Image 1 (cartoon, rainbow, N blue to C red):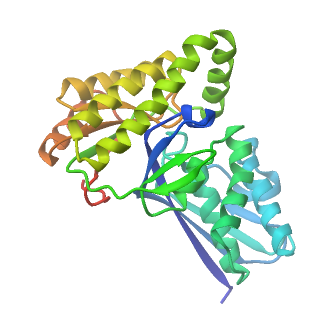
Image 2 (cartoon, one colour):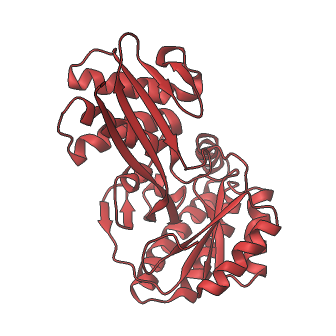
Length: 315
């Protein structure tokens, strides 16, 4: 029987700090284990092949959309001093791509783990993040490093680019509802647009970045104090600042407004924006179910409910 090895990674939810984290401000992210990537490396003969939602065939003939994966696999083989041949990588995903849930980072993490397990090599956390960064730079241009770190973490984190990552102990009596617009976001484009906006209208844009950073810090304190209502108000404010930075769009605004109209404590986009997902906060599971239903009726492609007390998917 051919040799085979697996690697796993999960999605992420950015609670606070999208885009501002790129400019040194803090961010809060949660591991989203309701969705995951499983990569399986199997021994074959000949050129490296791959099967995934984006490409099935030889790795070298893959489209530009998997350029990050091509470069990553080559880099891993070079690091391990192994030939780029004689294996197949199968990638199974329940993370919708391009929705701000950390799909690209999770794919990278799962593939790296799978290859290291396949070649019976030890993999440190530091090396894992270094290799994931190779992929993320191609996918997102100038990544903050947050996606890579949360995709390899089992705890919520408070992250700042220059200060690193600190685990957060969250037992908030509240529920997050994740709503998928069904529209593929474009993190690379959104990051570039924010950069251009800062150059075009620096005063207003930099103020929004600073305000988002302050909201992340205040959200951390509200999490510690178990204050869902305050966190909800911070989320809604954050969405307003993200809209000023032109990273929201009509489909996100529609679902955010729907959630607020259905009684959410707060709501905002999550991830890069320009499509993708939004999140809303509810104080009870009953209210979370009501908000999720309202989002579906308003056109959400999918919804998930995540307990901030247990860190698990509820529905």
